Image (tube, rainbow, N blue to C red; front, side):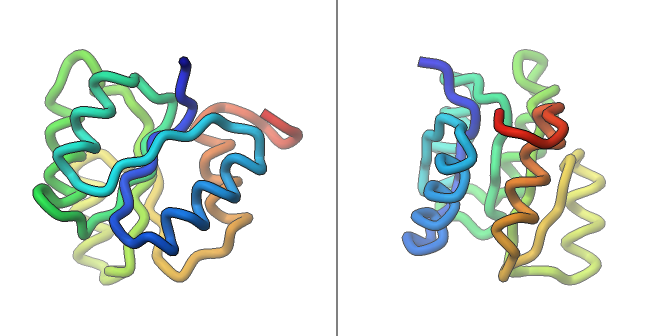
Amino acid sequence: MTVDILIAEDEPSILESLDFILRRAGWTISAVTDGEAALEGARRLRPRVLVLDVMLPKRSGFEVLKQIRADPEIHTLPVLILTAKGQQQDRRIAEEFGADVFITKPYANAEVVEAVRQLLGENGGTP
């Protein structure tokens, strides 16, 4: 099965919300709840986009992002960082490590869907 989006989020209500809005937009979703599983899932599933929370158990989203960018097999994977930590320093770290998009929580559902659309190269309409 091809997975469009891998979501790495440990907060159940946010994960449920993301899963719902992204499936409703027409994409296939897989989800994990810690950083180790996010890295393993990115390597195994080869999703088209990774939606990555920063504060995850076992390995932070920043660590996962750094590892992805260092891995020649998956270094081009588009990554959307989603975090409650919206400080400028977090944004700078995300950019340094190669995040494609940085969105802070709380977020608008439409903002996340639009960011994923852009990462997938889909200009409006359904995927």
